[in-house]
Length: 279
Ligand SMILES: Cc1cc2nc3c(=O)[nH]c(=O)nc-3n(C[C@H](O)[C@H](O)[C@H](O)COP(=O)(O)OP(=O)(O)OC[C@H]3O[C@@H](n4cnc5c(N)ncnc54)[C@H](O)[C@@H]3O)c2cc1C
Image (tube, rainbow, N blue to C red; front, side, top):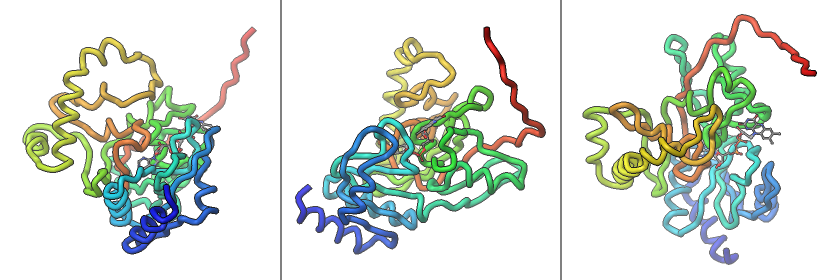
């Protein structure tokens, strides 16, 4: 990106964003790397303080034809959080609050920038936990776990991240907001009739998922920890459509998540370690 275009973009963003807009060479160098082997310099970085900040980034970048890349802890191994010329949105500094804990129904609503370890620290007094546990949990965020459909050692018992995401609040590519969760019946019919980008998404996803269903059934590997590709096998709930299931594992390519409602399980009363020796 030309230097003048970059400074115009930074000025546009600074005029509306309440959080930090960092387009200096030091910040661009910092965010040109993650845990992968790749190195690609972004146009700049935004640390949003709110949903409105995130909307502003998506809207301004969309208008200027600039790529946008959400980032959590940057511990993904495949270069998901580095991109040449993109504006990186880093949620870890300001958007990391737990918004609501429902102990009775066993769910939590949280912002995306909280680490998995910190989320579970806040849930512990309630005897509850969010189960995905990659070994990077002290740095990895809820946003990143959803982006990668993270697993971890205990996913054999509890399942993948996608099995525990109940809903998401997202910012779409045009800066509009939407709530994605399982919708069915009259609510789904209403979504399918809505105008604008959100309605287009519902209509397109239902069409693509229905047409792809036989291929998905025949070809998607039936293994416990399949996390590659879009979850076209899960999006069609019986009688409904759940776009949050499609978002999980989409590696930030579909929308920016600003909060999520997550299923929790009771912390086991006892835990132990068994070491098996093989001859
Ligand atoms: C040593 C090591 C061990 C690991 N072990 C495991 C393991 O056991 N199991 C496992 O599953 N993974 C593992 N990983 C991979 C990685 O740590 C996890 O997938 C982790 O959950 C990613 O979280 P993060 O916050 O770092 O995500 P990031 O790397 O920052 O992002 C991951 C993806 O999520 C997207 N994203 C982030 N926030 C948002 C948002 N708000 N909205 C939309 N998209 C968003 C990003 O664009 C990106 O595509 C390991 C990595 C390392 C380096």
